[in-house]
Image 1 (tube, rainbow, N blue to C red):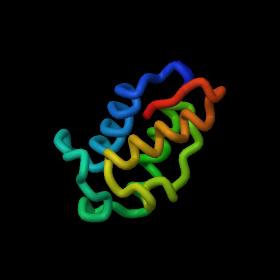
Image 2: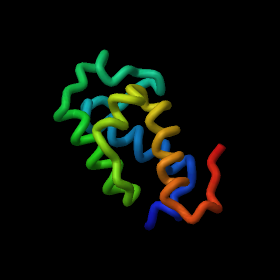
Image 3: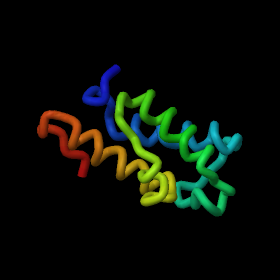
Image 4: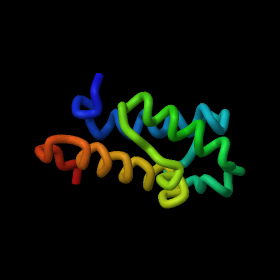
Length: 92
C-alpha cells in the first residue's frame, strides 16, 4: 500500500500503533505528551521509523519535537502525505 492509498483513519491507526508499541502500552490518550511519557531520542527514532515505513513517508525527528502528541502527529502526517501526493488529496 502506498502513501496515496492510505485514508485518514488509517493514518491515525498507524500513528497510534507506533506510539503504543514504542511506549509498550495499549492505552494512550490522543493528547498524551511524548515527553511526559518519558520519550527520549530513541523513542522518537523508533516512532518515526515505524510511521515512515508503514506509510512510505519520510518522517524526521523534528516531527515528534514539533507535535508532541498523537493527535498533533496525525495532523502532521496527514499534511505531509498531502504534500507528497499529487495535490488532489486534502484531508482537512
